[in-house]
Image (cartoon, rainbow over all chains, first blue to last red; front, side):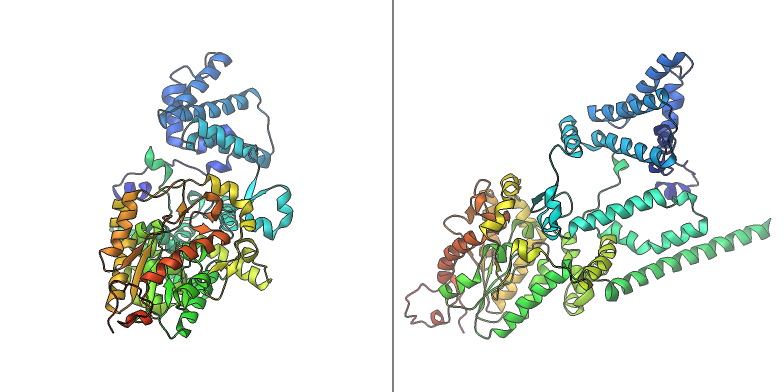
Amino acid sequence: MAIGLARMLNVRLPLNFASPYKATSIADFWHRWHITLSRFLRDHVYIAMGGNRRGALRRNANLMTTMLLGGLWHGAAWNFVLWGGLHGLYLLMGRIYPWRLPAFAGRTLTLLAVLVAWVPFRASGIDATVAMFRGMAGLNGIALPQMIVHAVPPLAIIATAVPALPSLGDGRTLSFPEVTACLALGWVIVLALPSVHELSQRTRGWTLSAGFAFTVQALFFAPNATPFLYFQF
Amino acid sequence: MAKSRVIASQARQSSSRWLIRGCLASLLLYALAFGSLFDRPLAFGFLRAQIDAKLEHAAMIQEPKLVILAGSNGPYSHRCEIIEPVVHMPCLNGGIAVGIGLDYLFARWQLYLHRGDVVYMPMEEAQYVRTRAATAVGPDAAIMFRHDWRTLATLSPDRWLAGLFAFDLRFALMAPTEAVLLAAHFHDPRPDVTGTMNAWGDHVGHTAELAMPNQATVAALPRAHASAEQVRAGYGTSLIISFIRWANANGIRVIGGLPTEFADHPMPGETQEAMQSVYLANGADFIVLPNFSRYPRSAFFDSAEHLNETWQAVHSRLLAEQLRWHRVPIAAAHPDDPTGRPAPRNMPTD
């Protein structure tokens, strides 16, 4: 929307996101994610502090400082600092251990690292972050809707049956496979299909107009739609 | 130069026309697909079957009847099977689910309610405060657009539009999935896990034993209550008031009631008063049970609106005693009522 509105004023905004989840390394991720901010931090913080011109130790310190400031740019809270710190750590590890992984392994590892870092970014605070990490590590066990466990009894070996999973729709019966299917579709679109910028103008037109009805539905009639995350920044 | 500018302008116009046509085709395909092809027989068909079964039953009752209208609090926490012999009136549990729009619920039931009937409404807080936008896109929107154009036509035009756009990508994904499951004779686990519906429309079989796996979750369920102001200003409230007025004009007695709730986290007094005044200020009655419909968490099945079967019976007996004095009994319509019961307020005089 921002790109379209700017075009109406004859302003061409630079590309800001280039399929970041297709990145094969964390460095690649930062070439694709919030590109304008990455460039700003690189030009005005990292290079301004000396970049990689004063030895490996200073380079690493500059890199970490830049990422911590990048975290702070998103909000004055410790969880954003932690997010920036995690990315700084990932970048440092990439520099210290410059392994060349096969594309699929690199992509998987990068995606996993990015998703782990999203936890402090989105959590309401450090306590919530720790609670989420505990859950992700399976320290709270696995819960599944009682009806799913009833329908597939072997699941009872690994999962505790609960009446509802409030965070997954109503999480009662069909909303669980429903949300799972939607997530799977989302990941297929994100990881396997070309981005809008990679499509030809004709294909882009087809894609956009084919999904027009769903766009109207989502914009005006979706009761639980959450606003675009970056509206808050 | 001028010629190239003209060509560029023509290309832009042609591209715009092409995009507009594409968007219109998208809308047309969407309407056709969801209006006649895609359906969710397991998720929404389940609700539709319940609504239709209850209305079919209502159509067969010729004498004055008691109908319970609410969300799932109705069938889970109230038992017409127990209430009926106490109030000496056929009783029908018409509640389905909290997500079903009240305008839809009332529109369907208005066709089957007649002079002398009594409607008891233990509406859940969420039903009072639900917004117009949320009401418009509930599951009933998809049900109406796909199967019940007649009812949709009786509702406001914003409901028509919301009906058309009630289908999201999830619906498109799950419709073929559910069709395949149905074709493969998928065994629906719901009756085994939560119980089923009896001839009165009550939910039965949600025993304390079946509730055992839910107890830890129920014990930890957070409870937020609506404020009095939210109840007064709620869109659901305005629909309830319209229904009460319609009922008054048609000789149907409406009685409000409190929904069941956790005794350890009751609704604020002001909220309850606001709820009561919705009925009392519009010529209906309101029943407050001695226990304010509050029960310990161990009495619930899987949420604050769903008592387990044992406590459903307890609650229904308590309520039946109160309803006995508030109903519009055929006998009490005569001035020399041999039972000597006090005449209910707003009693029809025919």
